[in-house]
Image 1 (cartoon, one colour):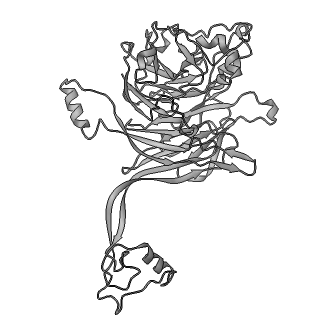
Image 2 (image 1 turned 180 degrees about the vertical axis):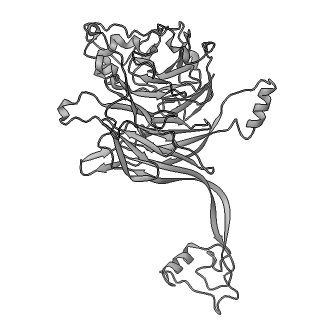
Image 3 (image 1 turned 90 degrees about the vertical axis):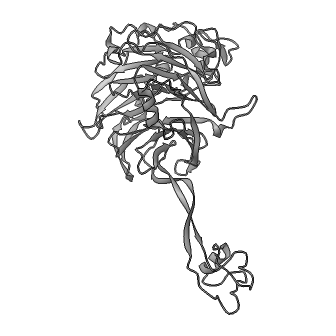
Length: 510
């Protein structure tokens, strides 16, 4: 890489050996020719901090939780085996845990606007007392959920018996019935001819509450609403465990998890005259360890680092990260493909990974002169930018992620492909994988060496007659614009990836 050794601090040399990825499992796999419902398409993926739980959100407003099973309660035993140098199969396995309806479709009558139920982002919060906590958001409303095992309690040993509630025979101790509840609620009379046995009860039994099986219950603890005029694109938890941010196109709000009826606007890029609007906020994230710092990206390809200690309204950034395009290579599409769709802080907080339409870029927050590494993802699509603009594919928002050790980065592409790059010093790892049971089927034969250059745009983009939604990538493989892998997440401590291909969740390990 043409980085002058600047990225050496990312990780020690030796992590550049390319990984061999293997299929782990799939949830919701489509059968051949099966038509996928729009509401079932996955729109968000997130591992929790431990990596033992995984959450997905879909366009139907549902959140589905998965739980890791291969660790079980043998974690200590596994560690003992590691010390004894026994070979251990680190094959991660997850199982379905529960699901709940997080958001419903709404209608804003003031603006005559339909609000989709689609889950835009999910973020895990700190767990406590065996309960799981997470935030989920659609375009307008954020919800705070608590998922916990609850014992189902039942009132037993009542005098009234549901099987004899309507008769005049003797009633013995049994479970309370619906009709008896109704009798009590109506002050002693129901629409049915409910009657006591002749002579009354021989003895009065006190009701007993007994616990039966346990059920997983998801309860919405708080709703954070009416704070965004535009669509929410990001939510991010603070390392203090008490606050989080939510960002839309023009504003970033700071919330306290315990207070749902007020938030503080900390960034506002809305101009006095909307005709002067030149850029919008596309993604925002808190620093993983410094609770006073956050970063947000824009549609102009820049990343701004914010220090909340400087002022209450953080309109002025403490650092700006952007790479200027050479004037000679600019074209109609330059600003569109420069828009950053996602940013992620590395676990160490030293680096930021950003994804624009064509590339992945790794930034060192101590060096704002340019990215320390640039990884070409869609360079082979440059001749087809006109077609991509025609079919709106050029506006697709691909996510990105980093491994927990900071040695690798990953992002999605078309034809349900995703790419993994090594970012340690001297690494040339650039693996193309397919979201299928045979991920290495579409693997690149030659590793493309990452470079800092974006390459030159052709001066004139010619319209291709009869252009369709398919083509051939740099490796000679056919690609399809209608199937795209937008969402993926890297396990926080292991080389394990979760990828969303339409309504299917594929998991891989290396």
